[in-house]
Length: 291
Length: 243
Image 1 (cartoon, rainbow over the protein chains, first blue to last red):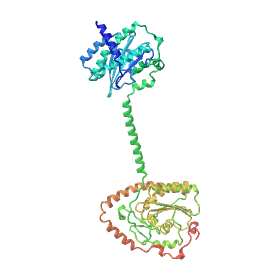
Image 2 (image 1 turned 90 degrees about the horizontal axis):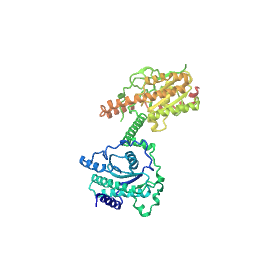
Image 3 (image 1 turned 60 degrees about the horizontal axis):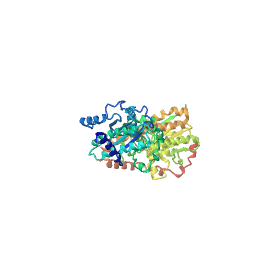
Image 4 (image 1 turned 180 degrees about the vertical axis):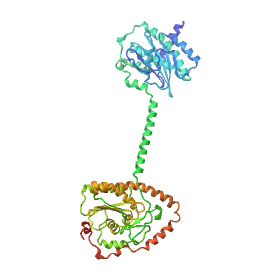
């Protein structure tokens, strides 16, 4: 049995191992023909050409691990698989982000591409995003199962880095084999079937997100573009500070107003009785108002 | 606890009879022999009740009364101790407004114990339409703070308004001036009270008050008791200027 056969076995093993994913992982399948480009979405610290197949923003991988992974992923040029560890929260939803990255990075001749995206937030989440062109529902379903199977491998790993490595190492050759198998049967762009028409057992296996033709008009709105550029944490902090200052000023104004209008009482003193009068001693304050 | 009267640097006062400046309080003016009994004899009428607006001739229109009342209410709200009366009368020739004000303040019977106490902080403003004069009088409780100089200054400041807008406008202006001045006067009084009385005289207050009370009792008996029943006549006569 040669190496090619082992790969095929690995592929089918992966395919049949597809099980429901854990809550912190998700598989997304994208069709470049149906999912519109994000336009000028400046998610966009995203380079037009990736420096490498492994982009590790928080630098969690050791140089050795990174280069090993890089080497194994570089071999899969026909169906490139990228591993991106993003520092902080994603500026847009993962599907938009993945769409933007894969759309930019996937060469025209590549039929499929994959991205393993890890969002390095306090609650880390792993996304396996698989993308292709003119995907039939069957192909989408297969890709989805492939992604889920890759994620399943991560469950057995002791930590997240190992899980990412295992996922990437399994997904890259599996996607390559998938691409080679797919070449055997020509693409059928006009025969797409909505996911709801899939057989019930297959539907039950589909746990990830499946893009249907009717739902493919999802575009990046101007709001998404703006939201991507805004630093919401800073805005929230500034809003709180501004609110506090305004409240303080209002409170001071109210206190000042209360103080200025509070009733005043003169001290009571011994009256200076004079001219035997009980209440008042008289005064000489008088003017004549005749002009 | 009452503060002694010298805590607030009381200014000199004047005799309502001869307007002479006096340094010490006495039962009779050393210059003209004026006292409350002589004054009562000059106005042998039954006084009208002391209310906020005293206008027996209806010389002020409703709008003017409303405006005056609102201005007075504003002052009374800021200084709840003080009650203000605005009186318009047609006094006969030769009758001095200041003496008449003095008579009104002392002669009008308070209806209750509380009103009698409040009378000490009463501010009376009297407009004599016949002689075209405005005079003001205050009770003993205020004369340490609103002395004759302050009252006269305020009247002179409001004189333009009196001449241009009439006595209603002028009086509104005067009351507003006094209200503003009273704020700073109150501040000074409170500071003086804290500085001189509250700290220094705390222990001697009772003694001082007892002496003052004793001296007060030695003054002449209440004025009302001195008046004979024949002297009481309706106040309308005064208001209309007829004898």
